[in-house]
Amino acid sequence: EDTGGTCHIGYCARSRNATCNRNNKCVCRPGMCNSGGRCVKPHFSKTPRGHSTFPVQMHDNDHLKHNEPPQWSTSLTIFVTSADGAKSMSYMVTIKQIVSKFCKLGGITANICDLKPEFDPDIFDYTCSWWWDGHPWAAFTPHLNLTDCSDCQLKLPDPDLHHRRHLALQYQSMDTSHWQFAGEPEKMWNRTFLYGESHNIPITVISADKFTHKVYNVRMTRECPWWMATSTTRLISTAASRIATFMAVSSAGNLMALAKQLQFLSLTTEIEGIPV
Image (cartoon, rainbow, N blue to C red; front, side, top):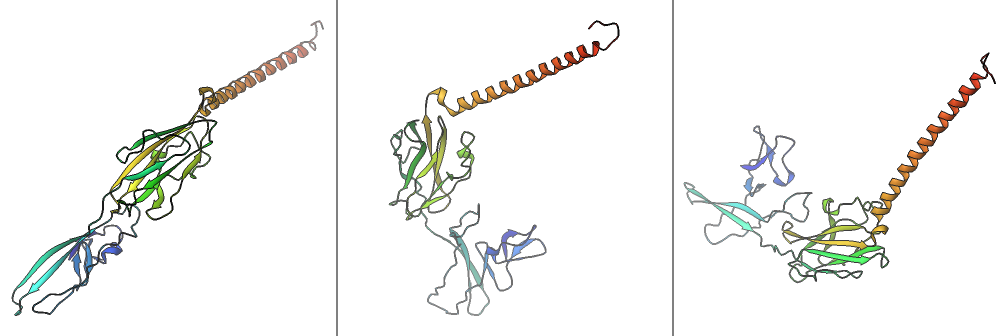
Protein backbone atom coordinates (compact mmCIF):
# COMPACT_ATOMS: atom_id res chain seq x y z
CA GLU A 1 0.00 0.00 0.00
CA ASP A 2 1.18 3.51 -0.86
CA THR A 3 1.92 5.59 2.26
CA GLY A 4 1.87 8.90 0.37
CA GLY A 5 5.61 9.51 0.74
CA THR A 6 8.19 9.75 -2.03
CA CYS A 7 11.86 8.80 -2.27
CA HIS A 8 13.14 10.69 -5.32
CA ILE A 9 16.10 11.86 -3.25
CA GLY A 10 17.42 9.53 -0.58
CA TYR A 11 15.33 6.99 1.30
CA CYS A 12 11.89 6.80 2.84
CA ALA A 13 11.55 8.38 6.26
CA ARG A 14 12.30 5.92 9.03
CA SER A 15 9.05 6.81 10.76
CA ARG A 16 7.07 5.44 7.80
CA ASN A 17 8.64 1.96 8.13
CA ALA A 18 8.26 1.68 4.34
CA THR A 19 10.39 0.75 1.35
CA CYS A 20 11.05 2.58 -1.91
CA ASN A 21 9.60 1.01 -5.08
CA ARG A 22 10.55 1.52 -8.73
CA ASN A 23 8.25 4.52 -9.03
CA ASN A 24 10.09 6.30 -6.19
CA LYS A 25 7.14 5.92 -3.85
CA CYS A 26 7.21 4.76 -0.25
CA VAL A 27 5.09 1.61 -0.03
CA CYS A 28 4.51 -1.00 2.64
CA ARG A 29 6.27 -4.35 2.52
CA PRO A 30 4.22 -7.51 2.02
CA GLY A 31 2.22 -8.34 5.10
CA MET A 32 2.13 -4.71 6.30
CA CYS A 33 -0.73 -2.21 6.06
CA ASN A 34 -0.77 1.57 5.69
CA SER A 35 -2.03 3.37 8.79
CA GLY A 36 -1.92 7.15 8.62
CA GLY A 37 1.15 7.20 6.37
CA ARG A 38 3.02 4.52 8.35
CA CYS A 39 3.34 0.82 7.71
CA VAL A 40 2.13 -1.31 10.59
CA LYS A 41 1.56 -4.99 11.09
CA PRO A 42 -2.15 -5.78 10.83
CA HIS A 43 -3.97 -7.25 13.79
CA PHE A 44 -6.15 -10.24 13.02
CA SER A 45 -8.98 -11.46 15.18
CA LYS A 46 -10.63 -14.79 14.44
CA THR A 47 -13.40 -14.21 16.94
CA PRO A 48 -16.64 -14.56 14.92
CA ARG A 49 -18.59 -12.40 17.32
CA GLY A 50 -18.10 -10.15 20.31
CA HIS A 51 -15.27 -7.59 20.18
CA SER A 52 -11.52 -7.38 19.90
CA THR A 53 -9.17 -4.83 21.45
CA PHE A 54 -5.71 -3.92 20.19
CA PRO A 55 -3.40 -0.89 20.69
CA VAL A 56 -3.01 1.83 18.06
CA GLN A 57 0.42 3.35 17.66
CA MET A 58 0.30 7.16 17.56
CA HIS A 59 3.01 9.50 16.32
CA ASP A 60 5.80 10.28 18.78
CA ASN A 61 5.50 14.07 19.20
CA ASP A 62 8.01 14.22 22.05
CA HIS A 63 11.01 13.72 19.75
CA LEU A 64 10.27 15.92 16.74
CA LYS A 65 13.05 16.99 14.40
CA HIS A 66 13.68 20.64 13.60
CA ASN A 67 10.70 22.13 11.72
CA GLU A 68 8.88 18.78 11.80
CA PRO A 69 5.14 19.37 12.36
CA PRO A 70 3.39 17.37 15.09
CA GLN A 71 0.78 14.75 14.20
CA TRP A 72 -2.10 14.16 16.57
CA SER A 73 -4.25 11.85 14.44
CA THR A 74 -3.84 8.56 12.64
CA SER A 75 -6.02 6.45 10.39
CA LEU A 76 -6.45 2.69 10.37
CA THR A 77 -8.37 0.27 8.20
CA ILE A 78 -10.59 -2.47 9.62
CA PHE A 79 -11.27 -5.43 7.31
CA VAL A 80 -14.27 -7.68 7.94
CA THR A 81 -14.46 -10.97 6.09
CA SER A 82 -17.48 -13.25 5.97
CA ALA A 83 -17.31 -16.74 7.44
CA ASP A 84 -17.12 -18.38 4.04
CA GLY A 85 -14.48 -15.88 2.86
CA ALA A 86 -16.57 -14.89 -0.14
CA LYS A 87 -17.20 -11.31 0.92
CA SER A 88 -15.02 -8.70 2.56
CA MET A 89 -15.61 -5.13 3.61
CA SER A 90 -13.25 -2.45 4.90
CA TYR A 91 -13.85 0.44 7.30
CA MET A 92 -11.60 3.50 7.66
CA VAL A 93 -11.31 4.88 11.19
CA THR A 94 -9.52 8.13 12.09
CA ILE A 95 -8.28 8.45 15.67
CA LYS A 96 -7.45 11.94 16.91
CA GLN A 97 -5.93 12.95 20.21
CA ILE A 98 -7.54 15.90 21.97
CA VAL A 99 -4.76 18.44 22.65
CA SER A 100 -5.09 21.90 24.12
CA LYS A 101 -4.40 24.91 21.87
CA PHE A 102 -4.31 27.42 24.72
CA CYS A 103 -1.15 29.55 24.47
CA LYS A 104 -1.56 32.75 26.48
CA LEU A 105 1.08 34.10 28.81
CA GLY A 106 0.38 34.24 32.54
CA GLY A 107 2.31 37.44 33.28
CA ILE A 108 5.50 39.49 32.89
CA THR A 109 7.50 40.81 35.85
CA ALA A 110 9.93 43.71 35.31
CA ASN A 111 11.53 45.01 38.53
CA ILE A 112 13.70 47.68 36.90
CA CYS A 113 10.79 49.58 35.32
CA ASP A 114 7.03 49.91 35.09
CA LEU A 115 5.58 47.70 32.38
CA LYS A 116 3.26 49.68 30.11
CA PRO A 117 0.46 48.94 29.63
CA GLU A 118 -0.37 46.79 32.64
CA PHE A 119 -0.14 43.13 31.70
CA ASP A 120 -3.17 41.52 30.11
CA PRO A 121 -3.10 38.11 28.36
CA ASP A 122 -4.87 39.62 25.35
CA ILE A 123 -2.36 42.50 24.93
CA PHE A 124 0.78 41.49 23.05
CA ASP A 125 2.95 44.66 22.93
CA TYR A 126 4.59 46.26 25.98
CA THR A 127 7.27 48.84 26.78
CA CYS A 128 9.77 48.93 29.65
CA SER A 129 11.93 52.05 30.03
CA TRP A 130 14.32 53.08 32.83
CA TRP A 131 16.80 55.93 33.36
CA TRP A 132 20.46 55.40 32.53
CA ASP A 133 21.76 55.69 36.12
CA GLY A 134 19.33 53.09 37.49
CA HIS A 135 20.59 49.73 36.23
CA PRO A 136 23.12 48.85 33.51
CA TRP A 137 21.08 45.84 32.38
CA ALA A 138 17.63 44.98 31.02
CA ALA A 139 15.72 42.29 32.92
CA PHE A 140 12.24 40.75 33.02
CA THR A 141 10.68 37.39 33.90
CA PRO A 142 7.90 35.79 31.81
CA HIS A 143 5.35 33.60 33.62
CA LEU A 144 3.41 30.70 32.14
CA ASN A 145 -0.27 30.19 32.91
CA LEU A 146 0.11 26.90 34.79
CA THR A 147 -3.65 26.48 35.20
CA ASP A 148 -4.72 26.55 31.54
CA CYS A 149 -1.31 25.99 29.95
CA SER A 150 0.23 23.15 31.94
CA ASP A 151 1.97 21.64 28.87
CA CYS A 152 3.06 24.90 27.20
CA GLN A 153 6.58 25.97 26.30
CA LEU A 154 8.31 29.36 26.32
CA LYS A 155 10.87 30.37 23.69
CA LEU A 156 13.02 33.52 23.83
CA PRO A 157 16.17 34.76 22.09
CA ASP A 158 19.34 33.80 23.95
CA PRO A 159 20.59 36.89 25.85
CA ASP A 160 24.14 35.51 26.00
CA LEU A 161 24.40 35.13 22.23
CA HIS A 162 26.51 37.86 20.55
CA HIS A 163 27.30 39.35 23.95
CA ARG A 164 29.71 41.87 22.42
CA ARG A 165 27.15 43.23 19.97
CA HIS A 166 24.64 45.83 21.06
CA LEU A 167 23.15 48.43 18.71
CA ALA A 168 23.28 46.14 15.65
CA LEU A 169 21.25 43.36 17.28
CA GLN A 170 17.81 42.56 15.86
CA TYR A 171 16.14 40.14 18.28
CA GLN A 172 12.98 39.81 16.21
CA SER A 173 14.96 38.33 13.30
CA MET A 174 16.97 35.97 15.52
CA ASP A 175 16.02 32.35 16.17
CA THR A 176 14.42 31.75 19.54
CA SER A 177 15.52 28.88 21.77
CA HIS A 178 13.91 26.88 24.54
CA TRP A 179 13.45 28.93 27.68
CA GLN A 180 11.03 27.06 29.92
CA PHE A 181 8.57 24.18 30.01
CA ALA A 182 5.65 24.19 32.42
CA GLY A 183 6.94 22.71 35.65
CA GLU A 184 10.51 23.94 35.17
CA PRO A 185 11.94 26.76 37.33
CA GLU A 186 11.27 30.27 36.04
CA LYS A 187 14.23 32.20 34.63
CA MET A 188 14.96 35.92 34.30
CA TRP A 189 15.94 37.29 30.88
CA ASN A 190 18.73 39.82 31.43
CA ARG A 191 21.43 41.49 29.36
CA THR A 192 23.66 44.54 29.69
CA PHE A 193 22.34 47.61 27.81
CA LEU A 194 24.44 50.61 26.76
CA TYR A 195 23.27 54.21 27.12
CA GLY A 196 20.29 54.76 24.82
CA GLU A 197 20.16 51.10 23.73
CA SER A 198 16.68 49.79 22.85
CA HIS A 199 15.51 46.36 21.68
CA ASN A 200 12.23 44.55 21.09
CA ILE A 201 12.33 41.15 22.86
CA PRO A 202 9.84 38.53 21.55
CA ILE A 203 8.32 35.99 23.95
CA THR A 204 6.82 32.98 22.14
CA VAL A 205 4.25 30.82 23.95
CA ILE A 206 3.70 27.41 22.31
CA SER A 207 0.60 25.41 23.23
CA ALA A 208 0.45 21.72 24.13
CA ASP A 209 -0.13 20.79 20.48
CA LYS A 210 3.44 22.08 19.74
CA PHE A 211 2.16 24.17 16.83
CA THR A 212 -0.32 26.86 17.94
CA HIS A 213 1.56 29.83 19.39
CA LYS A 214 1.34 33.51 20.28
CA VAL A 215 4.13 36.12 20.43
CA TYR A 216 4.36 38.85 23.08
CA ASN A 217 6.78 41.75 22.48
CA VAL A 218 8.56 43.76 25.21
CA ARG A 219 10.40 46.93 24.11
CA MET A 220 13.31 47.41 26.57
CA THR A 221 14.94 50.90 26.53
CA ARG A 222 17.70 52.37 28.68
CA GLU A 223 16.90 56.06 28.39
CA CYS A 224 19.47 58.87 28.65
CA PRO A 225 20.09 62.42 27.31
CA TRP A 226 20.67 62.45 23.56
CA TRP A 227 24.28 63.56 23.93
CA MET A 228 25.01 60.54 26.15
CA ALA A 229 23.47 57.97 23.84
CA THR A 230 25.92 55.38 22.53
CA SER A 231 24.81 56.02 18.96
CA THR A 232 25.63 59.74 19.34
CA THR A 233 29.04 59.22 20.95
CA ARG A 234 29.99 56.64 18.35
CA LEU A 235 28.96 59.01 15.56
CA ILE A 236 31.09 61.81 17.05
CA SER A 237 34.02 59.44 17.54
CA THR A 238 33.81 58.21 13.96
CA ALA A 239 33.62 61.75 12.58
CA ALA A 240 36.57 62.86 14.73
CA SER A 241 38.73 59.94 13.62
CA ARG A 242 37.99 60.66 9.96
CA ILE A 243 38.82 64.34 10.35
CA ALA A 244 42.06 63.43 12.14
CA THR A 245 42.97 61.02 9.36
CA PHE A 246 42.31 63.69 6.71
CA MET A 247 44.43 66.24 8.57
CA ALA A 248 47.25 63.73 8.97
CA VAL A 249 47.22 62.96 5.25
CA SER A 250 47.15 66.70 4.44
CA SER A 251 50.06 67.40 6.80
CA ALA A 252 52.06 64.60 5.23
CA GLY A 253 51.40 66.11 1.78
CA ASN A 254 52.62 69.54 2.93
CA LEU A 255 55.80 68.05 4.34
CA MET A 256 56.52 66.28 1.07
CA ALA A 257 56.03 69.52 -0.87
CA LEU A 258 58.41 71.34 1.47
CA ALA A 259 61.01 68.60 1.09
CA LYS A 260 60.83 68.83 -2.70
CA GLN A 261 61.26 72.63 -2.56
CA LEU A 262 64.37 72.30 -0.39
CA GLN A 263 65.78 69.71 -2.79
CA PHE A 264 65.25 72.15 -5.70
CA LEU A 265 66.98 74.99 -3.80
CA SER A 266 69.99 72.81 -3.02
CA LEU A 267 70.18 71.74 -6.64
CA THR A 268 70.21 75.35 -7.97
CA THR A 269 73.19 76.25 -5.77
CA GLU A 270 75.28 73.70 -7.59
CA ILE A 271 74.61 75.13 -11.11
CA GLU A 272 77.43 77.39 -12.46
CA GLY A 273 76.42 81.02 -12.92
CA ILE A 274 73.74 80.91 -10.30
CA PRO A 275 74.58 83.06 -7.29
CA VAL A 276 74.59 81.34 -3.97
